[in-house]
Length: 198
Length: 232
Image 1 (cartoon, chains in turn cyan, brown):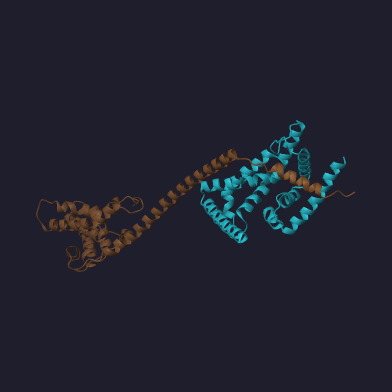
Image 2: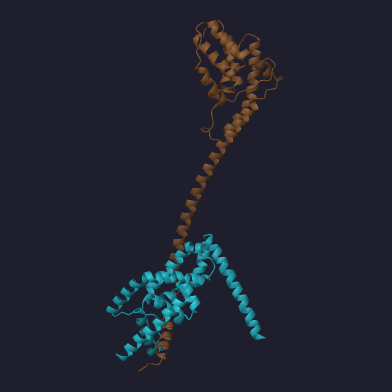
């Protein structure tokens, strides 16, 4: 009984979500500024997190967030509703992140030289130092991946999206996503193992 | 030696946590909305300007088209003067009178202007009289009356020629020029048939011109797009 209620609630919630999204899309098409604000409030965290994972740089990620939502009023004119608005936004973010990748890498190298490593998470004295180290090692390994492989890995493994969703965001066939993911996993394992052996 | 896969998975979990810290993005939000607001304002300003230009062009072309249609309509109306009407009696001796549209009259007048004129005053007057009263050709008659008056401004038949010329102008729909030509006769101190007829014709012309004048003073009507009746 509870399962049925939960299922119905989920259906109602999804329906409301769709209607809300449709309303936002329609308002954006009419150039309404309040719709852009609503879209930002709803999806900026999602876009920012993906950008961080693709760029490993908070400042560059913030630039991507700004560019994605600044481009939205124009980009929405070509939105056909074949994917959700979130997927549409993440696809823009992936495209924009490619342009920021070199700048982000340069910035990170400079910070490393100055020994003031940018902080990716909140400082927590209880933070497990080993896990923090693991996370930073993976980040460093991701930086050495080609961007298409990094996109596939972040979307499918870190973001835990399906290969179909990842394909929609990366604007490539699903099979390509799976191939890139395979190569990314193999290379990351190699990089992490190599570090460990050093 | 093969490493356990959990190393990568642990790294992924740690990386996920490291990169998932929320940010309010308030500054970015303000920049995005500010930029979009500026673009919206620019676009709406451009749209308003484009609409104003389009509306102006549409009004201009509509007014021009309306004037053309109206001119045709007025010309079409002007050809039907009933036989029993006072102007028809004055202009055509009781016959139904056909008024010629100004554009057509111009073409005929151009053709008439190329015709040779006689030297003698009587011959000149006779030709104009024939064109007017026998051939019932007001365009040619007007040209002939003009020839006569140009050659003999103080001739024996000058008053008659001027009056007949005014009648021709009425028949050709050149009401402004006709009114100017008829006014001296209407204002003549001497009582006569020409004064009475001139006043009658002036009243009739005024009735016809009032709607034209009202249309001319309407705000949407472009002055430059229509021919000036008074100047003809």
